[in-house]
Image (tube, rainbow, N blue to C red; front, side, top):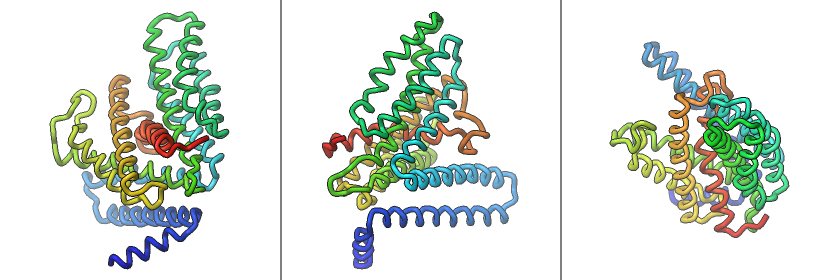
Length: 332
């Protein structure tokens, strides 16, 4: 068995980067086809109302997974430029979902136009040109100072700080955070050219597994929640177990990254911890907005809302990107 695994590992490492990515997608879509077929057969056998409700929820989750897989495939096929445009469109839709649930006033219209039609294109334009230094500070420095100035020029002082903070936070999460996901595709490692797509896949996998493992652990442990009024399922133990599960997966996937096994373990734990804590923060924002989910059933994902799907990635991507770039001393 060990010899077979060693032979498999040698064969995988002997493939080119493009061949490895192609094999990755064949495996991913093959598993999704099998799961979809199994779910369809199970739905035919079980006709009770309770089972039907569970099947519908699982169907929505499976549909969202299919959409995510297709988006990831499209990002790889279209290359770095196409991936940047694709995630730019996702940022636009996520920011739109976020803004539609805020109580905005006429005085916010200028700031919102600035966010959608200037800040977002410039952020992704800087990314496309690989201006990583300016890309990293453009929103936290320049945009955060510009937004309140534009709002003040509108002459509406009512709830001024609250309104601007909400707009700034939406830009930070939906544009700044999410833009770091396609940035991983553009990173060049000295001995791992053309393998940026693997880093993006690696990040998505560890963040997703952390979320699933944390949810499963919270249901079984039934520990006292940390913040009952924000999320009744969030506890430190469940969060730690979710992070641990993602870290172990990350270590197992080290061969598709430029990392060694111990480096992959640490990077996966860091990304998973940031992603799950970010989702917890978004739960607090949803409570403040008085909604259970971002968007509605007619949203892009066909399930709950686009922002619900990408929220963990919005927090994990910048932490992961800058940690990798700092640790490996990567230059633009």
